[in-house]
Image 1 (cartoon, helix red, strand yellow):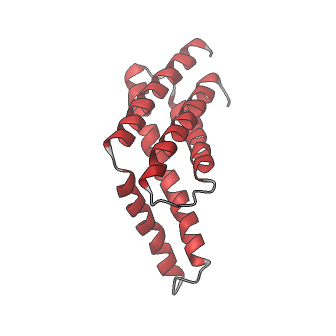
Image 2 (tube, rainbow, N blue to C red):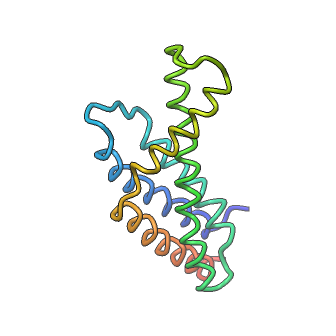
Image 3 (tube, rainbow, N blue to C red):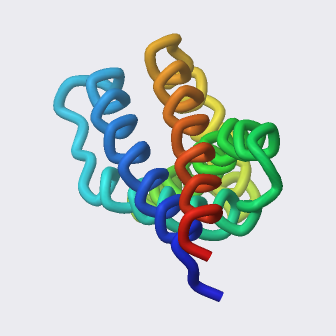
Length: 146
């Protein structure tokens, strides 16, 4: 059921995904074509905020902080998975894999490589601090606009 807490959480994590996507892009090789990178990450952030963070609103401040820390981690997991699948398909279209299993394994290899690439203190500090702010704003929205 839509409510203000889910809306605030979705907008908050979507905005956080936008900011962090901008922080991650310079970490890749120069000349990388990002295509729909930011838009897909923002959509993943909105959906994660709506379902994960917004769905757990109304349980108190401690729970809001905990969910605020969990939300960005879930968002990063799904964004990495979706972006890795997209990259695997792009590489597969060039006939670089010998079979389906090799392509499936490549999804996890690409995801692990990109996870290491984005593992910097500024990126994770932004994710976790932003997540706590989104969690607290979601709790406030739940208490204010039931």
